[in-house]
Image (tube, rainbow, N blue to C red):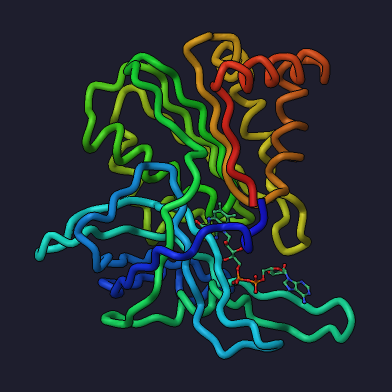
Amino acid sequence: MQLKDYDTTRQMSASVVSSTRITPENTETEIRHIDLAVDSFDFSYQVGQSIGVLVPGPHAFGQKEYLRLYSIAGGSTADDFKPVISLCVKRCFYIDDYNGERYEGKASNYLCDLKKGDTVTLVGPYLRAFTLPQEKDANLLMIGLGTGIAPFRAFIKHIYGELGGWEGDVRLYHGAMTGIELAYMNDQNADLKYYYDEDTFKAFQALSPRAHFDVPVDLEGAMTQNADEVWALLQDPKTYVYVAGLKQISELLDEAMVKIVGSPETYEQQKAKMFDEGRWAELIY
Ligand SMILES: Cc1cc2nc3c(=O)[nH]c(=O)nc-3n(C[C@H](O)[C@H](O)[C@H](O)COP(=O)(O)OP(=O)(O)OC[C@H]3O[C@@H](n4cnc5c(N)ncnc54)[C@H](O)[C@@H]3O)c2cc1C
């Protein structure tokens, strides 16, 4: 399904409650945590869904507006009882192949430039990519790259902050080029650390060994260090696997898993089985 196929007829206005940079100021990568108060009391969403942001025009080539999707990274209620959703947005740039010039990503720059009190138009929510199992003894293996942590942040807060008493193992593998790009887990902003004391929760970081030379994130290293546990989890019928983030994650994860499982065939079989049983879900962008 392409973005142009999404139904955008039901539009809601939302105002910016806060916008906080969660990567240090002196670093190139800017990731912001943005809280938006939705101007609709009957707006409801579930953990793991995405919201659409409409970037108003005028735009080049007569494009009226641009739609982009963002995972809901958390939620709360404002003093006036309006629903508040959190987004975790990375400011994107790209270099044009032909002229080598640097362009700003449209929606991410629009969102990252918003100030407190500004209004935006939202559509959705969309997608039910991730559903939390009902059983509290289910194991959750979450693997996220970059802003792919957003749905997992919502999951972890929901599991430990709202549900409580989770008995299954919850494992988070979070990949980023450098430690400061680890949203919600870097030195400056680490709100996920509040859950490190939970007996069932463990988080592992996968970084690039040489970030400045564009060497990929070492997901394999982080996961193979815990190979026995990952393999045991995969074989446990109570385990659910969730994968989210930029599309490089699929390749990195496949490489890591083949090492852990021992053969590509065994891994593909296990993954297909879990897909069929609704225990493997991916949100790749
Ligand atoms: C389900 C889902 C959930 C998502 N969740 C999040 C999230 O939680 N946080 C988050 O930050 N992002 C998330 N994204 C990604 C987000 O939707 C946007 O794709 C991202 O912010 C970039 O959008 P943009 O409008 O800023 O950039 P765009 O203007 O769309 O550009 C995006 C990229 O396209 C490429 N590109 C576009 N035009 C050209 C060109 N002319 N030449 C070369 N390359 C080009 C570049 O690589 C560029 O970086 C999610 C995506 C999906 C599908």
